[in-house]
Image (cartoon, rainbow, N blue to C red):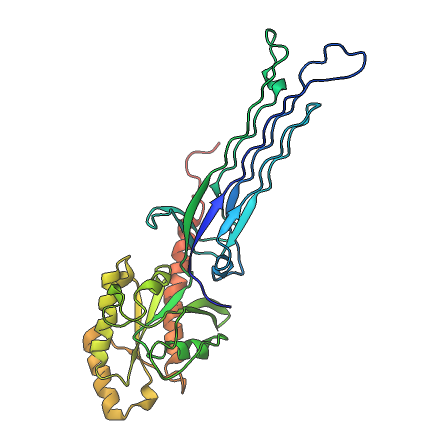
Length: 347
């Protein structure tokens, strides 16, 4: 399944049904009077957040969505049926923007959330509605109102507990494949990962979702390489695992390059909790390993984790460090969402 995290769609709610002009015509009933029914209401366009989806691929080959129109009124005081609601299903983390691409309309983060994107038009009144003591035979009815329509942007920001960041070929996909059941493409050339990948990590009966973000290079915020398009998926992560390639020319400079891009991107990414690890250490000599660790330590001002996804060295330590921060963040969220305890005097 191809990953798609952005789509532009056109949505239109259903128009309301027209009212009916009708009179009762029965044998032996001389003055039957008006009996035209009202038109039905047009269907709404609703966005629903559902589990089981992690891409917007459903909106790749179909961009126009229209709800059903309301039924027209009929004689014998029969009202038209309401139009069927059009429900568009999106994955958790989907944001809806107006056509300008900047005005946020809705942010759906939890399964079950629904948002009415366009409201259907009201149905028109039939001539029975206009009957009065002074106008006992009205011969006019209202047409239905037109339903709302608009162009919107859908943007997906994956919801993950932890995110993997780093330069291309830092070992992010290999780490994801090692600790989860995900099977990302792994090769020895830059930008092997073109789309974010997700995997579920299980340690000591605990689980968390890990996201692999395509690599960044210097100038990504200006569109170089794959640009900073995929950094939006990191915004919802609780913690970042920054992998620095041990076989790079200078581990400290590689670390600072990514940190600079996070800072230039904004959205608070440079303020998120971060765990730094020197990857691919199995390919380093003891002397070079010591030198790279010292460079990285000076750059990040902490002792990095020595990690090798191929040999398994440091993998468990990195996971436990991630879980420690994720568990604490979950506890904080649970305390914030807990109902406030009732205080005060009770009889």
